[in-house]
Length: 403
Image (cartoon, rainbow, N blue to C red; front, side, top):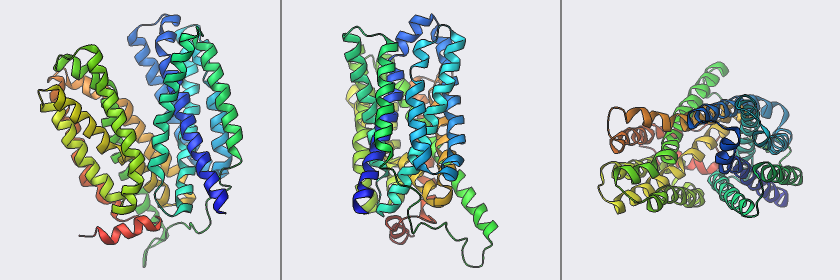
């Protein structure tokens, strides 16, 4: 059993790397596809919304399917479909077919995203200790691999279709090889949470549903902050602080590196201090970081702020996904799909919200909204204090963190 559980954990790492790599491969080829199809930046922005819509729909479909068919079925299917549809945007001859291609690829990506997170919840449940943040860290590793592969392919003179087709085929192969190691079902000893003494099952379900949507709202706020950093960190350094383009590019790199490092360390922090503490104090740290960015007039202050922002946010989303999955193992897929889906809406909305605010205030002052969202997340972290169905590591935190 120990060996099979270790193999399942490794397979989950593979799927997170795979998802990050396939998504990153599309991202690094956006300029080439935009030029080939002959569309404007404005049209591209609309097409990216179509991709996001597809991903959101995929998440909502995959969640219940995962609970019904099992992660051992849905995760490999999602991986194969995601790998097979990666090439579609590179083959699209016009904006309309590109929109369809992105909708389909987004749908498959959303299916893989939710199902692999549901499987990660089952692996974490079987381990009896936090491992979720490590999985999310390897997703970022996949993005780095995609960037390296894209750069190498461009140097070799390969076009977008050849590169994306090869990466998709490699992804299908990795999916099929890793599929056998996935857990066959929800681990034994993971019953659905009881409604509580004197409470009806219906009341328990209503309470659980309310808690899931609270987690989803917190995910929306955290991922909105993350999305804003993706699109506005470099522009802030360049336009507000006057940094050269080469220097400004390091703003996002600083944020991303801090977030990856934080996720590699977050599981140990959760084991020692509890998920509630990681979410609460991580949000506080992120609030301090983005406030430093918003108000600091120096480059070093901005770099420090982006690093603190990434480090603080790094452990937040994995804890929310984990709590959603553990709330009811029999409905882990559906619960994760709700939290991930609303969080993904925040990720897409973040850049747009900050853009709208810049019509009213300077860009750095618009970041104060992110400070408020992080502070609200810190207050809302108390939802992790009562965690029905959680593994022992989180049950212990309810005792140690009680007021």
